Length: 404
Image (cartoon, rainbow, N blue to C red; front, side):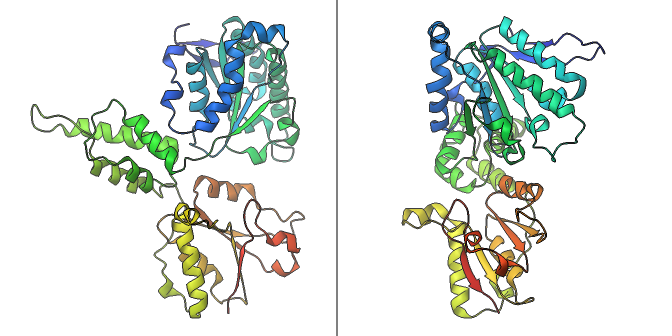
């Protein structure tokens, strides 16, 4: 199937959803995806097998209910879905779930019918949280529920048709209704994270492949400098440098090259963009006992270079609890730590009246997309918390330090 723009037939109101169909040759493949080795292997071992042996899958009545991709914005969720289509010779359709609200919800069935008639096909329903947010987080108009019901019905229709694969993607997994992500709706829940140093190096290699780059370009150094950058941002940096090289021209007959300096300057300009600002805070702003200052400086070193710390067998702490009377400098210490080369600073006032004590997702989500980040949770009720709440989920106990 050639790449073209198609549309679901109009409903009674005449409204219709346009969608772009990419042919397999217009889709990237796994070779174009830098890093994500474990993720690509997981997809190949499941979806790849279904597509390689569709007849046997039908004979064995293998049911597959789709893939839910979740992770921070810019981590490559849509790209990995497109690359899956290209890798296994499928056409590709992407639809934003925001378009399905209201009258558009009826178009889900038409999109599924179109996909079943044009196999093999990969369908991506992006911004899945627009229709699948937990109750209390949606508008309450019922539009989201209608769209979600149509979408889940479509998943059931193709669950035993191995040559139609459905992906859903969201930046906000924590906002999804738990009943939607339970077993039976999606058979694979895959988190797509921002790349680590190894993955960043592979992403740079992938996007510089086939482009004239200066011989002194150091991929490892680019990976080191680009800590906290997403895969999408790295791709944008390489593309921008290629465009700048073309625009700069140079002497007639000279070879255009992407230079090391241009890449490093673009990375430095990109690190910290769209992140909460941090003022020029230093340890000179804080008067502390020398022992406390030394411990906090050590914590700062762990934040600045966690990979080096892990190389010595030290797992960086996931948090620190500063406690003491008001006005003793606890928040200022957090600002100084955030003024290290990479973290962002996000002040967060805890509502002590909240029965769950959980942070507002609208404030913690920027921290995920700005990682590494320091969240300053200000509260006067830490003494009332249970001992178990003083441990940081997913990591070693939070460091505790009395101030003042």
